[in-house]
Length: 269
Ligand code: NAP
Image (cartoon, rainbow, N blue to C red):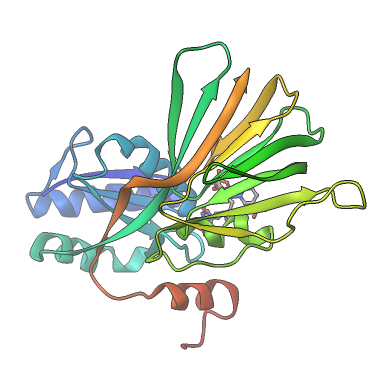
C-alpha cells in the first residue's frame, strides 16, 4: 500500500504524522507522495481540503482519510488515539470506498481564447474584489433566471453544505445526492431589485452560468483558495464528472456527523 500523509503543520499534527510514519514503516507500507493509493490528512477539515487540492489531478487513483487533531470534522473523523487501529485496518483490509460529488467551476474571459477550470470539494464563491455590490445575471439551463445584486454567491457541494453554505442559511444536503446548491450572500431586495431569496438546489444535469454586469475584476474562492479574474465573460457551475473517494473502515453516517457537530457530541441519534 502506497500512502501520503499531509499534516496541518502544528506540533500535535506533526507528532502524529511522525508516529504514523514509524508504524506504517513497520507494516512495510510505502510512503509515496507522488503516487499514493491512500492520502491521510492530519489536522482538520481545512487540512483535508488542502490534501484534496494537492491530489485533485489523480482522484480516480487515491482515496482520502482524515484524522482530526482539533474538533470533530466532516471529512476528518478519526481521532488521534485511533491511529494504530486505522493503520491495521489500512494494512489488512480491502477498504470500502465512498464517493462524494464535487463542484466544477469554469471561468471564461472576454479577451482570451482559453478558460480556466477548477474543482471544489466544499464550495466556490464569487464577489467583487473591493467588497462593493456584485451585479450578475444568472442563467439556469440556458434560461435567464434573475439579476442578482448583493455581496456575492456561494455555490456548494453536498459535503460542503455544512460549511460556508450553512452560515448563509443553505440546506444541509446528503452527499449521496449529486447536486449543487446556490446560496445568496446578502442580496439586495426591495421594490426595485428582486432575487428569489431562497437557496437553489440544482441536479447534475442542470448548469448555471453567471455573467458579471460591468465588473472588471471578479474575486472567486474555491474552498480555501482565492483567485482574482480580470475581464470575465461568464462563470459556469455544475456537478463535476469527477468525485472524491473516501476510504471507509467503519460506518459514520452523515446525519450522525451533523448531529455530533452541531447539536451534541455526547448523544447518539
Ligand atoms: P478556516 O477559517 O480554517 O475554516 C473555516 C471552518 O470551516 C473550520 O472550522 C473548518 O473546520 C470548517 N469546515 C471546513 N470544511 C467544512 C465542512 N465541509 N463542513 C463543516 N465545516 C467545515 O478556513 P479554511 O481552512 O481555509 O477553509 C476554507 C473553508 O472555510 C471554506 O471552504 C468555507 O466553507 C469555510 N468558510 C466558512 C465561512 C463561514 O462559515 N461563515 C466563511 C468563509 C469560509 P476545521 O477546523 O476542522 O478545519
